[in-house]
Length: 167
Image (tube, rainbow, N blue to C red; front, side):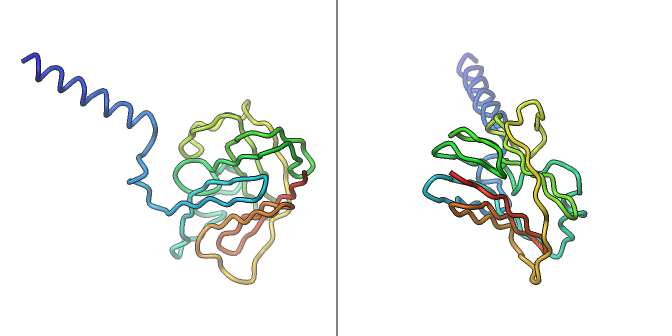
């Protein structure tokens, strides 16, 4: 009986630690990617369009979005920089966006390890900055982030937003 109790306790402890960390990587429905430049690393999930209306449909306008799938996107800056002219200290942040038809707002948030945007806390925002959203000529089937020494560009469906970065 003591062995059964101990085994049950260990199983419950293991299960609670798994659920406390969010979904295991094996349960992800979208592939994940990491984009790197000399001074920046972005880790994010890459969902597919799959015939859906994305912005203003699947992802509501005016609502905080994790900028990807599964865990919220994380961005690490190796040194101090400016994002859309706002100063950002070197470090790791959760990257959210608020998509709108003509403008996107980028949010760098200090709370790490979030699943989606379900626990988004505006009081943890370090930077918020808006840029114009553009309409693409061709459909981008899979959410894509491109990064260079000068910018972070996000594209999905027929929409793109580019956030300038400077060091």
